[in-house]
Image (cartoon, rainbow, N blue to C red; front, side, top):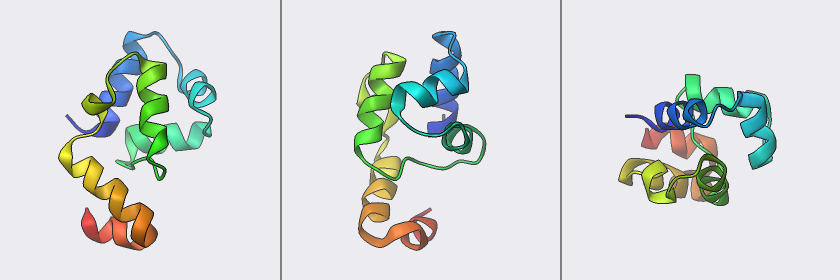
Length: 86
């Protein structure tokens, strides 16, 4: 299951809209949509913990080894590095 699928499934289980999740985490609606539909990942590492808190899950569930690697690459090398890592 991809990161976006995990977020969408948990959000629906909690009966939350994308707007409600965006407000709870402090991001835009477009950002949540990007995670769920476009296969994007949070640019900031701390967003994983905010998502886990809002969705009532463990942060390790959201972060697989691949997602953790992509997050680290994004923080170090920006979006270009993240695209290459993917």
